[in-house]
Length: 437
Image (cartoon, rainbow, N blue to C red; front, side, top):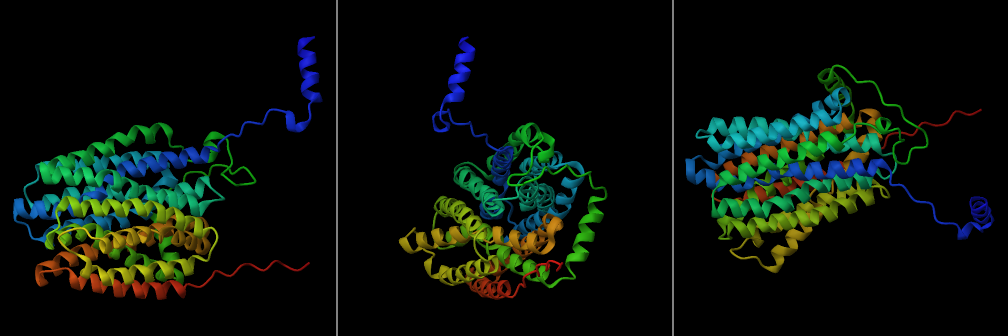
């Protein structure tokens, strides 16, 4: 009787008086959260190269050009590995590829503790860490976004891109303190342990596809079955590349992203700390400024993802590159022994623009290349890292040759102006016209 009365009462209640239905969070957001934490844990290796230049130069007597060469190999492999890693994820799954990549990063970073020759730096930090980090590149974030999300892709790609900056924010002050007060070796060991610590989370929590848990991608109206593993990962990556290079937008996207890498990872991340130290600024103060870039990078990248969902990505890219170029032209006048308000303004401004270019670039890759967009973006990212590698090496050579970094700042500012013009001429992909009845 009680059960019947309760049921009748519940049925007789007006709709507004019924208890609200519990809103379930879509599994895609949990996968995005695990991806975010994974990228944060792997970001420690990105915080170290700029901190190693002076300690390795002092301990081993290696020139800055030699050390910059190892960093450039790391940056180049970071990009060149990305498209093959995206194809490997289609073949073996995201979880396996990322777990192996983190292990390789830990191995390469840990082995640097025992090195005593420049070729060992090239092998450990250049080759091993470069290969591992390339598999953890933004192509990983692009693959997760494409598989798990149909809506909010710009926002999600911005959040996952910001994870790398968050990792820099967490690790850079700690690592710089280790390098200055102890040695560079504890910093290298910390990088190895951070990479290993993330492996269990990846293996246990990172699902490869929404179909694995019986769900649709976020925002999809229909269930998407899990595609069969794609054999021949290397062949597919090269096939997609050969198809993409026959299109004009690919070269424009690759060119703009190469300049993006040159003006961020290759320039500021690698050479800002030693350049500031040349002007008398303590290493910890310069590293802290880089960490502040990481803070505002998170804000800028997420905001850029939000803008990309609402505005024309070509115009966004043009604005981002133009503003970055102007800021670089002022940097030589701002470097000083102490931190002053104009320098803080530069750091905040540059942080907001640091990787804000990623969400609109991803959106243009999806627009132009559809299902192959993750692999195409991997090749575009390869150009990003080739540009970063060139400037990481040439910046060290310029410092050895001219005694300062001024020529590098001015040249990079001019390149950013060229990237702004290139972004504006990327053509729209024509929309198919519906057939008339």
